[in-house]
Length: 520
Image (tube, rainbow, N blue to C red):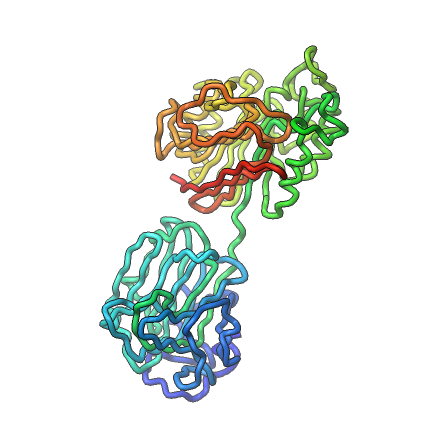
């Protein structure tokens, strides 16, 4: 625990009347966002141990007893050009936090500002920092936008100041709030800042950039906030489980090149961060029979059935097969096995389309076996439902998935989803995930006509769930990455305001693809 929370303030000479302590707690100004809040303490400095053992790393910063605000020990940065700082990697990231500290400026010189407080991501990317100019002006730099702002406030030498930085990381609607000696600094306070979308994972005091000259004391450093809820992770793949009568089924173990549904499913089981599974159609060959589901899909991908939100493929609707082995086909062609197996999670059996929320994202599942869904074209019931659903969920980030791709280099693309993709594009949707071609392919953002558009829809074909591979024919426009030899899953981290993707191959696979993007 920090000293401000563990005991009353001892009698120390505080030359600044603005640095007010009452019963061990710094007094917050009336009307402050933090005035009445008591969020949990994520970190306290531990200076009373006489060491920096509570911190994760750093260099040049000393714990000493000559310059102290409270207790017997405090930290001091005395540098004439070398880095002098300490940082703490938080036990859990947070999207909203406050760093509060006592700051004592002895001196500053040179031509460069001294950054005395920085907040970073867990990997060390700077988000924001407070600094003092050579003329002792307090300022804030937004490291995401690169904008530095000076305030009218002067950091007086020879006294202890109460400094607080409160931030909320929320893309272009982020918040910065700076309080100095108990009063909000309007020039450094905004509820429309852009701090990106990655939560805070590290706090630093002192300056890590060499060439700066200053002498400062730090005491009573506390970090408060709530641990951020982990961003949801969606695992996606289609074209999954072989028919039990397939010669390559091999008791569920498959062969070297076919029926890898178990090994691909193991990727999901090995990743506890995955919150939802998007099964992208043709999840059970040859015809989605319930008996085939029970023997093939269920022992493999059925192990995470409780978190699966599927989309129906064309194979689930096959009524009979005379060319390849097929188990328990629905003679009526209604995909009965699929809808019975997944139950309510598959949506209305007469439609096969539905939507749900996943974190800050809206997720839409469509049915591109159009004749079974009442059509997919302009004015169809599905297209009208889609437009209404989009209007009812005007969120910043939307992803849709269905089975048959509008774009693919594998030869199985179809224009039947064009009206649906047009509605998604016009509503500003970010991502479309499909299967059908048994390959992996990533496209650059584009409009429904296939023209490059940085504000368009980014599409993935992920027909790599385990059944078998097909090949590429003519390379489609805007295709960025392709692979037709690797089974695996697309792992999507759905962040507030953005997303990150990774193609994860089954063991032994060397192909990978990863990247990130922002919502429109």
